[in-house]
Image (cartoon, rainbow, N blue to C red; front, side):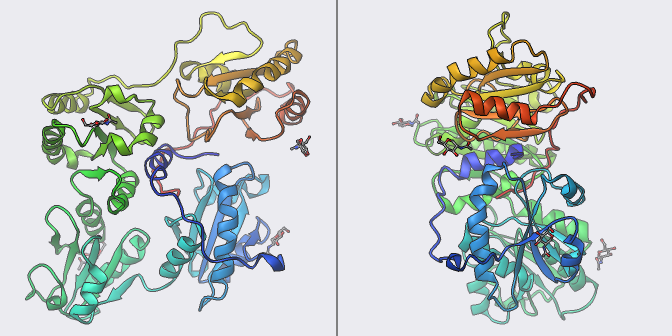
Length: 507
Ligand SMILES: *[C@@H]1O[C@H](CO)[C@@H](O)[C@H](O)[C@H]1NC(C)=O
Ligand SMILES: *[C@@H]1O[C@H](CO)[C@@H](O)[C@H](O)[C@H]1NC(C)=O
Ligand SMILES: *[C@@H]1O[C@H](CO)[C@@H](O)[C@H](O)[C@H]1NC(C)=O
Ligand SMILES: *[C@@H]1O[C@H](CO)[C@@H](O)[C@H](O)[C@H]1NC(C)=O
């Protein structure tokens, strides 16, 4: 499937800690009734136009995350069908040729992509909630209610604002006028990312000057300066304010789950992402953190977000980046197009200078790749990160590519079988059987979703990518290749199937 880079990265971080709990609510499976509506190009518009609020999942049958989501999504649909008013969940097979146009229209760049459609499809919003049934239900209940909650008393305020989340409250002399309208528009726009409230009386609010009578926007946060006021009600300015003020100067990643919402925001930000990985329990941790924070204060308005991670909690991230614990302390910066910059084994004094060099474009990007082999004449060809373009994307051939790990037993069992497959295609110049050591090479994760080993992908000469999940026998693999390959009549297009790296939550 086509995860986006930062999404995978987010998973590498968060999923290692937040194991999703099994849902307590059981679905109406016994009846065999399907609550999720199946839509396609023929009935999509009609159905959408009939709903004020409808949720649509764009999926592909081969996508692993979609398969995992399916029973949860169905369960959520069954629960929400009896919500008042009912919330409808639908799905579209975006892999289906005839539905591709819909997928393009809704800017679907990875699977699954879930959209919330309001007003008969006039407003479209990204689904950014959890992936298990109870979480989906909670999230959608909130999304289908009002975007901002009125605060009428100090009790309301303390219950709503609390101590440990970001909450944005508009204070208004009256709930009308241009400022109020702009605030309301913002709450609609950002409702999936933030909690919004509005009040007529700043005295109800727990922090800040209580004599203001607005219009004013007060952002509460559990870190840095704890609250900020803002009075510019231009829509764009207000949005920018909310996004900047709600991020900690340095996001902390460790095993404390109360930090995780900020980690998620960190990955959702459109900025470049700087990550310092250190061992929080060592003596030098404090001086590294304080140098890093100084740098963050200096550069955070230049399109860089900063995170400091405890190596003890970051195994997922280390695996994702191919980093080793003996490289700690290290900084890695990742751009949204996947480009990375790495400084291993750094000392506190290195931080400002290295970041300056990075800003000045003096640091070479880091791509993990084994060297391109000089000889590559075994039946199964060796692909490395640096030869992936040439052998897989630009060769115009039908390529079966195995992602393996040297330590993986199933991969070892598959090796002689792949050899036989490769031998049987040896006289067919249009078919290539290849393998890539996924532990030693960067994989374009927006194209290949490698969750385990071995993972087999097939790219037809014309660029259609599919995952092979059949039996690992010579016959079945050959059958699959014969079924999915393009015959050589038509010239193969050269374009790569990478997706735009827009950062979006894919949770
Ligand atoms: C839309 O059309 C598809 C294909 O004909 C069908 O399977 C599906 O049930 C239809 N959905 C609705 C809501 O009518
Ligand atoms: C509301 O937002 C619009 C669009 O940015 C802007 O033109 C208008 O001046 C804003 N109103 C106020 C009172 O700031
Ligand atoms: C972190 O430092 C502590 C104390 O020095 C040490 O016991 C621990 O093994 C270190 N952890 C890692 C992952 O290096
Ligand atoms: C794989 O093999 C098993 C046992 O031989 C068979 O039951 C199953 O249907 C096969 N699956 C596929 C996808 O061919």
